[in-house]
Picture 1 (tube, protein in one colour):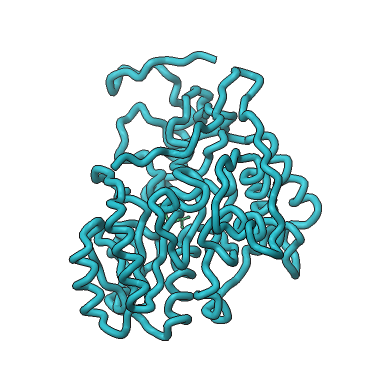
Picture 2: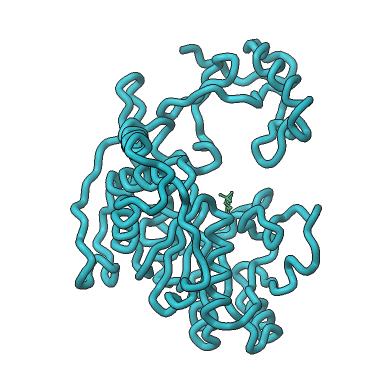
Length: 359
Ligand SMILES: Cc1ncc(COP(=O)(O)O)c(C=O)c1O
């Protein structure tokens, strides 16, 4: 395995023959040659467009050049590529049955584990991607409250559907008619957006911290998070946490667990199944009725098996007072952890303790 330091544009000694050929073919059959965030178009020319495989912390491009993957595939691959236990569980489930007429036992196992792990969760629903999960949260909030308006932070990303995509092409005013906007970490702006919504306020959607693409990141001010909680309690609106990007990466019991604020509904994806297409909506009993209006479980079962292994294998570390596993009827899960070490190069991806917030 040869690692070469990046060089100035135009002086890259790495072979790019396969990548060039794939780009040429893609340009004929894929809009723009590639689209969305995985397009290498805006990147410097020495970045490859096409990746061939990955193992642990390393990935190889279509020409066989090797890289350390500091991006974890834009977030989901937190245990490393092709983690043997995760892949074995997904494969075993896929061989048993993957697309069935009814959900498998693994769905119940996973829902129990999610409810036992996340403090605010009394129930869990599964879906296939983050946009599904955030959209379901909004629908559940509206169904439960009988109201329409959802407030979201200006510039925040909550998915690729017309109601939330940052790309305006193809989006109509009607798609966003029932949204209001506020500035992240500015409680006054939430209050005035809520006042404008009046008795039509169904929910307030927030990211765990400000992670808008292209801008400096900003941790949540705990007073802001508490203020959102108070506003939702006072108005009956749902506090919705979009944990799609941060979930199970900042803290296991939800990214606002260290802040001490529990949402009513939360959306999860990315890291929960180490790259397999799985998402979850978790919620409190107060928003359980809205479920009658919503929900298509993911058709395939193997991502649930992958998530089960990923979560069971995680060092859940701390005891969460109030988590559902403390309550009667929900089995408490044994804690288990394995050191995520790949024998070929000794790279350890084992996480340390939960991220510490500083304020
Ligand atoms: C915070 C957040 N919410 C929602 C989504 C949408 O997730 P998906 O791309 O899986 O639909 C993303 C994706 O990047 C995200 O970062």
